[in-house]
Image (cartoon, rainbow, N blue to C red; front, top):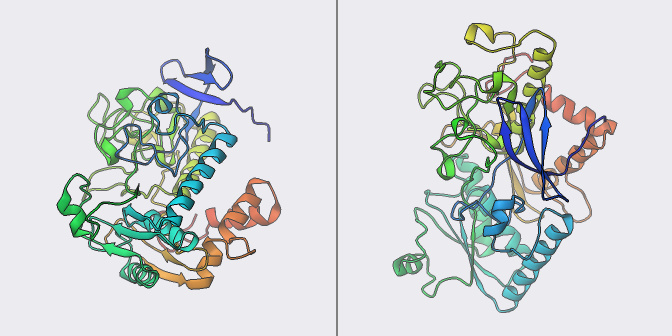
Length: 399
């Protein structure tokens, strides 16, 4: 594909010089790599109660984070290290299953529900309890999906407690969830945490999920200074950073433009589809700038020829697994509470989302096929990302 790949960690991104300081995998020295354009796709971390957002759901790869890791003995930068951690966690769960241990899952969003139901299926002797601060599972998703998942968990013997704040140091909390002696194992499945350690402070938020640290951006996905800095314009956020040549897409950015009640782009869920869509928009803008249509962004009137990103229709689609043989699929959700519709459930949704027996799930199989540059995957995902008419979302009607 004509791509040069550097395996290493970016320690600093310098917008003035347009360079990235990179510590490569097999060296203690820092290499400096220059660029004309840069697209930041660094994602985010989870585990809000850990100093650097460490969790089971995401490998611990950053140098600073590895020093604080709960599993320092494993280097998850390597495939073998990630495999060892998975096997270590599997063995721990096997031992817990043998002694019929109690497990508490904090957070009943789609990640918490998936983890609870997977544990119940593969480790049936575990006594599982799931809690959430909200009045029901699946947070802002529609009642139909929440009821479906709650009924499934009740049928499996998973205890649910809602309107419940996680307070592990308070004995009354444990009595409230009917675990007076505590839990043998706790899994925290709530929240996200920024991991933009390589970015200068003037580009990062001081607020937001997990305590802030998210990259500010404008409607063209260009990295900006913190709103309120010199050059700030309400329609663009802060003044552009690095002449508008650096873009931030997906989970690493602030996720919204504007403010409640005056959104230019409401908060976008930190899931895979919006990241792909935003990356496509950023690539188009890089090509437009390189072709001489845009050299420097000065104000709203000068940015009209660049692509304006939008709240993508795929950001409202959530597939929640309920073990390997059941699931539910929600479409058309948005930032409003209880929005969207449960359009698919049971075996059809499981085939779409999960692996049932020897039948591979549709989403993962076709996406990998596209990444391998094979025609079936390319055709399917081309039309997903080039939908002629947006049925929901906030993109232009015809795209």
